Image (tube, rainbow, N blue to C red):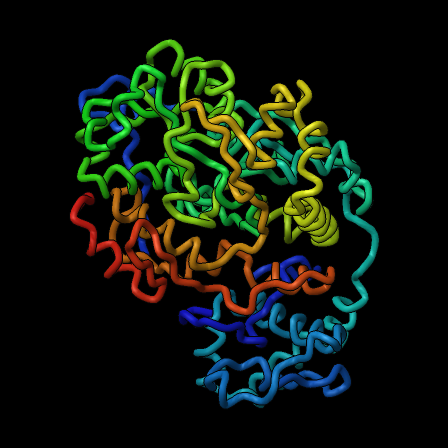
Length: 496
């Protein structure tokens, strides 16, 4: 799906969880030296129409040389075997040619009939498809390590352990508390974690080689939407106008985070240059409150529960929920390497289903109190249950003398819209984390597995969206995912 589209092309819906596997120049952002003059992050965290099964190896239905409108009707989701035959053929071609462009060029050169005959002469396509269709066998492994950073954004990944969602799908998952995102990234890259709770920009950055060696990574599901806030120290009660923040030091949990990009967006809209008028430090979430209390930070844009904990400890107040900046924005994600998906497809699918199931349970307001009690113990979030419950239920004290009712303070919606990824990439381009020409849609569709999520969600009885791209209104400015470069160019404050 190299071209941007607003609806699914059934011929391009590839189920990466199947046994057959998955199938812009971008530069690493220059890391600032700790303590260096003008450093952006000087306290940065560091670590080292389809053919039925009996029609044989005809490949015409897999050719995307024609526009979708001119093709025959795609596979019906009510006919699962028909869907899987189509998926299997697509995956075989992608395995042979590597990219859609190679496949298109080959088909253009020799024609689909000749192509089918040539491929069938060396590969028994019918037999391969049959093996794929019959591959719903046992899990390749049942003992898994899944990392998480102790924040409420990870609620589905965490609660799935004490509330039995992993066991429901035949898995024995060890959820491992991790201090910060660089550690989580590196343990994932080393294979110590089979999958992990990540920030939504991280799989894009890992795949592009921004901040680490380029490694194909995937984001099958969003963990949470909303759920963050800007907190200011109590000494700044008189500075609730962001134009008064010049010279402030703010904390964010990681460079490649929605927290960093939303804070930059917000202060820039107020006329402040985030690289010149304020300082931004990377601070692991569990250390946010202590740094605010000690005066090392004037404020932070952080995941919860550390916004609410600042109020609980009397050291800060909630200035603004991030849903007031961008309603429904993504934050954290369930992420896994392409290698994990390819080598253990049945295990991956079981894990993916358990996460989707847990996310659906977490999204129901009536379950939030029970979940709060399950995830607050020391081995998970290590927070008072009342703090977690204020976050998850949306009834909370804001540190300004108010008790607010915001049921959507945090929510849990797993669908990984491609347009989320495109927006994130525009901000990476805007602030110099990536340079040169960016294949926005191509990278978004490679990493964010929206079409796969839709297929699995539908199979589980859920109702996924019918589009993978949406426009957003962010602080009065419209984001159109079909015009990313124009969006980057429209900002007065940016790098380059």
